[in-house]
Amino acid sequence: MTAELQPDFGLNPLPPPTQTGQTKAHPWAKNGLIAIVVLYLLLLLFVPALNVFVQAFSGGIKGFLDTLTDRAFVSAVRLTLIMAIVTVPLNAIFGLCAAWAIARNKFPGRALLISILDLPFSISPVVAGLMIVLLYGRNGWFGPWLQAADIKIVFALPGMLLATAFVTLPFVAREVIPTLEEIGSDQEEAARILGASDWQTFWRVTLPSIRWSLLYGIILTNARAMGEFGAIVVVSGSIAGKTQTLPLYVEEAYKQYHTQSAYSAAMLLAGLAVVTLVLKEIMERKTQIKDAE
Amino acid sequence: MSISQSSSRSRSHRKNPLAQLADLSIPWKVTWVYLTVMLFLPMAALILKAATLSPADIWRVATSPTALSAYNVTFVTAFIAASINGVMGVAVAWVLVRYEFPFRKILDAAIDLPFALPTAVAGLTIATVYSENGWIGSLLAPFGIKVAFTRLGVGIAMLFISLPFVVRTVQPVLQGIEHDVEEAAWCLGASQWETFWKVVLPPLMPAVLTGVALGFARAVGEYGSVVLVAANVPFQDLIAPVLIFQRLEQYDYAGATVIGVVMLLVSLVVLLGINLLQAWGRRYDG
Image (cartoon, each protein chain N blue to C red):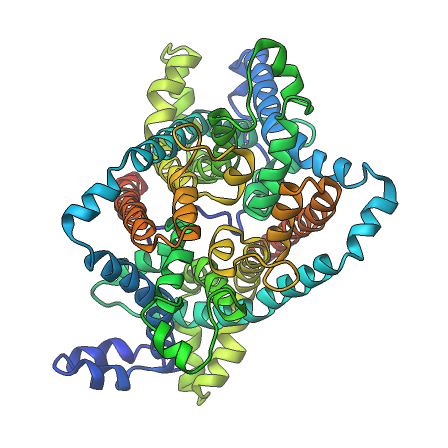
């Protein structure tokens, strides 16, 4: 139906393998292929992932805990949480509106709008940050006006929020559009004919049927919002204790050879990644059960 | 939230865009206002900033030796990484869809790790593991292969972040392919290799190429993991996004803007290409 810039990492549970006909395959071909794939994933994914956890505790529990009480670290954690708390609801509401507008209406330029929605995925995060600097920075479009009003956006929290919202903009809409298209508008129309208001229709009919894809979109938004680096590093100036999120803290600690601190913070972010993947698995099970019904 | 009204309404108000906007339902208003503030305004700022420069200046900055070498490192390395993942991605998807083996589910879930893991963490751990005394780097060092802080490291980081794209575009298509056709090919005497090459691969191609293009787009724009793995030395392993960042740090806004516009144009072309590839892929949906 729609052009997709992200493939559907979405709610596609992995079905059991389809092995009919494999009897004719040479067993060495099968085992060889599995071995190559496992080796590739080991080198690229598993060894680097394992390394994070090993390095985080290379200085023992104490080294790990020392980082956790570092003031710049605590401030980075707080700022990372603020990023997610502000941008996730914002993009969830926008995503719902955009998904509804696109899935429930036929209009000229619909495919174009979907492509536009995907732009933040294809624009380099650094370029996204650059755009915000050119718009709100000291020499930017709104620069003089902002300076007169004594509002700081670049090298401050608002710019970081804008950058984060930019790079996470498409996730919710991307996940919700296919589900909305799939369920169709029959139930919504029935509710309206029976006298439900727009709000009631949305709350009682539409939302329950899209809740898993909405939640999945929110989880992806959250993971990216907490982990974003390129866009934020451009607009934040990465001032320790002030405009440093966890990923920026990781980079600076690494550059200053505080490897232990870098890996302790990295371990926290890797934990976030693991939680994200586990939640994804759980949600796949949920949709699988729903489909089975 | 009004349902199926806005499209008919917008048609009756062609003349005045403002009146049209006021007439739209709330979701439409939210969509347009948010897109304008978040997306259109910043893009306009970038393009108009570039427009204030003279064409000669733009050309000079866009084709300066540093910039040209940065494009070379960025685009060529990203292309190689995306292509390798094109081949490996099909293998991974094939193994996950067709074979049963221990830890299959875990392997499948782990494919998404590059999406879930913050890029700074990816860069940090790849730099360590592939450094001269790292777990994997120390195995390569005796052969004189240096990975971390070289262009090879940039490639590994790009391989990492573009890995899921091909796997996730190919997987659903592979699941949908009927076994009958393959079995028919076998029965008619085709070898396993012939069957794969002539029967299985053609319908997979649009998905493979879409995945490669998506991976390429992601790798080209990547910053976080590469900046940590690379030494970021011009003419060696400096990528275009890092060059933009360095120009900004030197308050060279014009320089950053020009290279930013080049990157933006490349993203738009790749996006167009992806849309065309997907239109091609839909032919197979019948």
